[in-house]
Image (cartoon, rainbow, N blue to C red; front, side, top):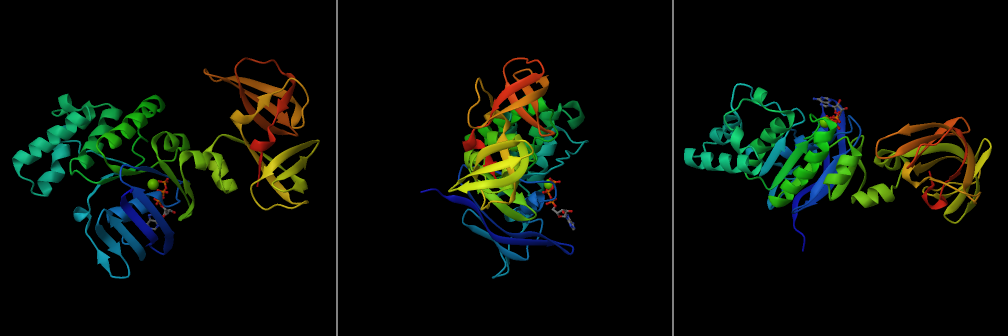
Length: 353
Ligand SMILES: Nc1ncnc2c1ncn2[C@@H]1O[C@H](COP(=O)(O)OP(=O)(O)OP(=O)(O)O)[C@@H](O)[C@H]1O
Ligand SMILES: [Mg+2]
């Protein structure tokens, strides 16, 4: 049986006069990494702060392991220090005048942990994070990635059951970030922790998480495995958020079960209905860039389109076609000269919303 390490039920948070979280529920199982995704202002940080005990919700409940830390009905509220959590903030600001060791040890000192135990725990966590040789340095003597790891060490030194990470990799450059997300995922697994990790970046969420929760205006729009979120989006919002897409506007001209035809200025395509549309409705068709292929012959869902640009990406080429005045983008493996091409748009992957 899977054990739930963190359970949030029907959580409402109001900040000032604004109702920010409007009934959020989520469970994190032991050993699970949950990525919290959503546009800026959707309430990601607010949710982490409420779980940590830094915001007082108006309604709902929060449980960490066996411990009920918040429940509106019974007016239960456990203070920040008594929740078995680690927290890495969006801006993780290390203390500039303290060494790496002192930065990590500070919280234990505040909690009056005996000196010997503090020393042992700090050294253990620094070693674990590959910072063992840096403990006498000050933050300005560290790289961005090393500073990030010190911030992480600071939250792990309490041996939390659950760790809350708010954009933990946002201060790293793209290359370092890709390595760090794999490292961070492995670390969380190795330490047998559970984690909720906020990110803006859907690719990062998919690489790191077992489960993705997508917030929109304080409500969970959809939650599921990375595969479900990417492959079975239940709304246009989720489809657009989760991948690199082409979006094509048109009008529905035929509906037959879950398949339908969409038409625009000089083109017509078969697609799959992903919302209840009827003949005559204006609709949006979505297809991931990687699903579009060049064709050798005119098939049912093939369009003859002018190629307007061919962009070198290093590991692939990106082609830009002109479809009735809009761009249709696709990937390929070689440079291509401008001119007309046959472009296959598989009906199964053309989602109609
Ligand atoms: N103290 C506050 N008083 C009133 N409104 C607030 C307060 N703090 C945040 N908000 C509002 O709450 C909403 C959610 O903010 P939150 O910081 O949770 O968003 P976020 O999803 O973390 O965004 P980002 O990706 O930009 O970090 C925003 O509209 C924000 O303006
Ligand atoms: Mg935030």
